[in-house]
Image (cartoon, rainbow, N blue to C red):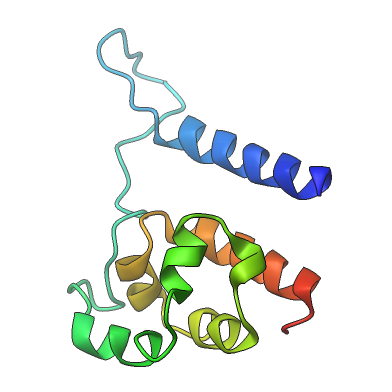
Length: 116
């Protein structure tokens, strides 16, 4: 259990450190580049996803997204794991603010719980 929390904390630290934007005092050869839109929920062709098609399968499972958003990963069922992990990237980004963190943690939790 402590290992799981340590992994979550480490992942959150990485996300926060990547999202920090520096203002002023920037050097020309600074490592940080311009802000990226990698965290924004966009589809493959650059348009926002259609929310109704994204939510069609997810709505069939009550409290699935709520459990994942609140990191209550013990409450995630097998059906919830399967539906969320097989969502396209743009739909997953529509449901969760930082999609790659949530997908990574959900995949680990589902493997630990034996759902996938």
